[in-house]
Length: 268
Image (cartoon, rainbow, N blue to C red; front, side):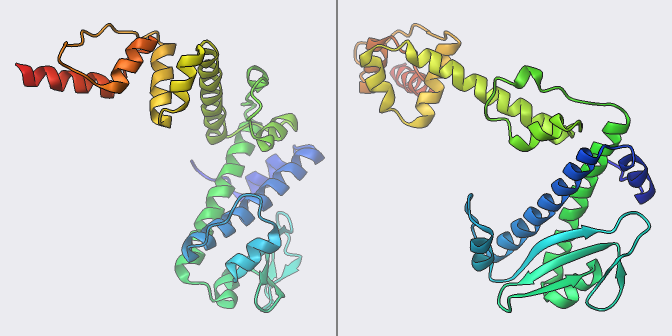
């Protein structure tokens, strides 16, 4: 996807409501802060757990942490880098060891932080991807390419960020639309699984609950598809799990069918 020029971004943003501008601005800031942490944690081999506070993240990384990204607006350079250069975009970063805040431009990010060129390059690439997604939102807004969430309202697991984005009047980017459909597929599948499971008798549930997760999933899928294939079991073949499945009226798993086929092939 081609990026918009700064002039085009400014022109489209000027057509947004105050709430839409605020949402987009906050979305960009959160995304860039998250990308910064993601790249630093990957490079340092640090695992960041969901739900960690900002202080815990800073302590875990023991490095430079992006606190804020300020945008002075199209054609304006109201901020200054530590080196004195006027800036439109100012990156406010915290050095966790010194407990000191630095206000930097993009060029000085590498000079002041001493982060490796590889990390800085990955961060810039990540920021560029985020800017491209902003451009996609703006282009879709200009072209009135909106995505309705009405038929997905029953799904409780749609991310709040996506819901707010639609409610404020912004279109979703293609990646987000794909996410919504993936969530729907997973949710509908879980509902169908639960429906099948609720029809089990006590004996079936007891066996099912002790199966490996992948076996439970395959079994439910076969039962959803009503894939109950009658298999001829040779008199001299015995497998405890296969016997239990057949006694309970469960369809055989692919693993079971393969074992039967191998046994029959050996008999020939």
